[in-house]
Length: 206
Figure 1 (tube, rainbow, N blue to C red):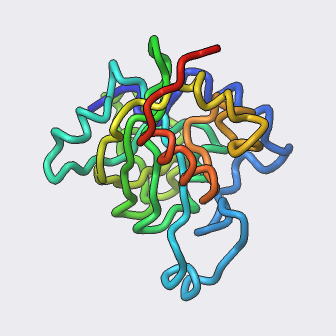
Figure 2 (figure 1 turned 30 degrees about the horizontal axis):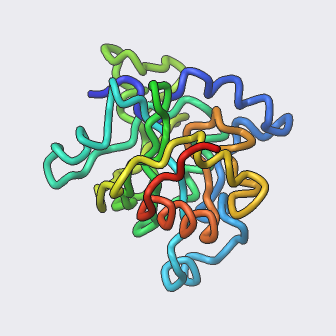
């Protein structure tokens, strides 16, 4: 199993952004989005959007494409804030696949949530490098979702290109303000704009 999927080395630092007392309280479905919806409303509503970070040397979008059914558990999240966001995901929610900690980090594709949050088995496996002795089957701490590849983007949209729009269409994007977090919410406007960039030829830096 990949070692760094959903687990940026800097995730721990991101905990500083979590209000005191909130780190051990999982969020319910959809509270990671801009508004809280009942289960009935959530099922009938449009999908929510997220960004998932993975180190390509450990688990790349090509690795996801090679998995049976192009589906894989997104395990290894060890940040309370990222976990809480993940627990807000619902089936059919859409995620940007982001290559992190690499020479050219950026968005490389799209995947879809096909199974909602359930206990992360790697945290319960004493032989796994992701093992957490504080997590128990009866009271798990860490969770994962299953994601399925939708498609790879026409081209990688690098972080540096995204930063060029931090005061425009991507203003307020979590990646550009709290970029160390491995699971992040994305607005529909940000999602649409990034996919638009992926279809354009990259502009030469002035």
